[in-house]
Length: 252
Image (cartoon, rainbow, N blue to C red; front, top):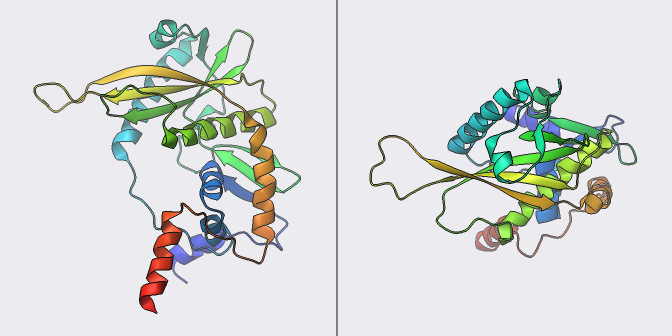
């Protein structure tokens, strides 16, 4: 068994194990997108083909973290917060590097859901805190568009669920979490006459009032799915399942 197979084997759900099974926010997204692909991945170790990383997005995320960390040390607000009327400061907590996975140990913020023995985890971008001591979960997003940025696009509904999972995790960890979370968008402009080896970004903030009431019922459904010996039916909109079906048909 090679290293890839060993890694896949460790990530598989074992119904006979008493150890908590780690379930990331992205795998919850996968279950919502297609239970069949989720089962093949987490139960059978047959994940979808991997995608290349988005190095430019990661660079923007890190630069934003650096910028907010400078203010975090002194308990100061970012000028963007003043611009959008957000009465908060970056949250200073000793576990923040772990929550953000600054050391690349793939741990993040996590909580054990005892009824299912599933450890729910997610790697956050930032946390702010208001004067009431309530945490405001923040996610950074990079884009490049001349269109108005909103959270109403179909594909951005996943952004909202991502934020709501993070809110749920921190509530389970015992923190007071405000229902309002924020997306900091860095939008790279395209209209400069010359590139000159640099991109110029416009920063903006969009708010979202989260509702995490769906999270726990979904975790319970995921546990039932993992315990089943039957592979779930594919999602009607799953491109991966459609592709696999076409391959089978052609091979016949």
